[in-house]
Image (cartoon, rainbow, N blue to C red; front, side):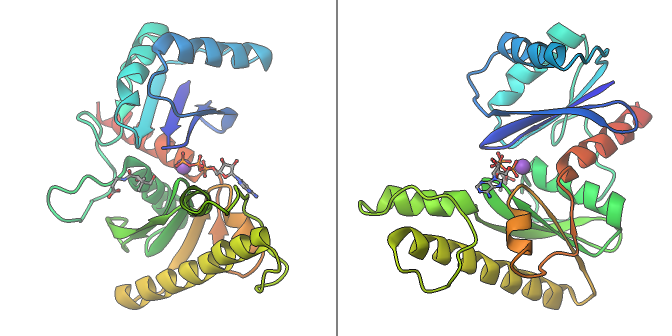
Length: 257
Ligand SMILES: Nc1ncnc2c1ncn2[C@@H]1O[C@H](COP(=O)(O)OP(=O)(O)OP(=O)(O)O)[C@@H](O)[C@H]1O
Ligand SMILES: CC(C)(CO)[C@@H](O)C(=O)NCCC(=O)O
Ligand SMILES: [K+]
């Protein structure tokens, strides 16, 4: 069975794929100090708790944090006796072309998202991921990754206001009733929420105009539904998009070996 690991700058998600579906998914904060043994104690406790008794024989990792990769390699080797595939590293081949400026290291999460998007929905896509950053990634008609947009994440934007301005509190995102806020929290939520609605619409419209073809917009990440409920911004929402991409890339590479 496959263990797929998606390390973001904020959270790391572990999912077990049984060949047909994800039988379990767990989330932990990303900390580069965490050792292979700590990963195993955490994972085996959760597996035991959910009575999941499976043999993990393959591991694939996508990490936007370079420092965590070493310990995840040790983890895969020590506890599952396998060499992990690490997206973006030697030994991992993508099933699609990457057409960006020479020397550019595209975030593996962005590549994985576009592989998943192409596999599920075909070409000419915009994939929007609401993580630490909000990323827009463009898939050409042949599935190639051809670039995108990086914007500050929703929670990061709110946190930046709190960090930089003494009188602004920590606030969680929500859809405000009105645009005109009548208290500090409502004003901040309005700025980020409606600002984001505008950002998403503007960026998608400009990408479509620049690309010059009909495009589908696919969203992923916990915050996508919050924006979608205010306006129909996305054609599809897929919470497991990154995990699905890891499964596709794993199968592609295991076939090639
Ligand atoms: N209504 C909400 N308000 C605030 N946070 C939310 C809400 N819905 C979901 N979230 C949070 O949004 C985050 C979305 O997870 P996702 O994996 O997409 O990004 P992340 O883990 O924050 O970023 P990264 O992948 O870059 O580490 C989760 O931490 C989830 O708890
Ligand atoms: C943009 C993020 C932070 C989104 O997770 C990640 O994909 C990343 O660190 N990318 C590296 C630079 C790039 O993708 O061009
Ligand atoms: K993510």
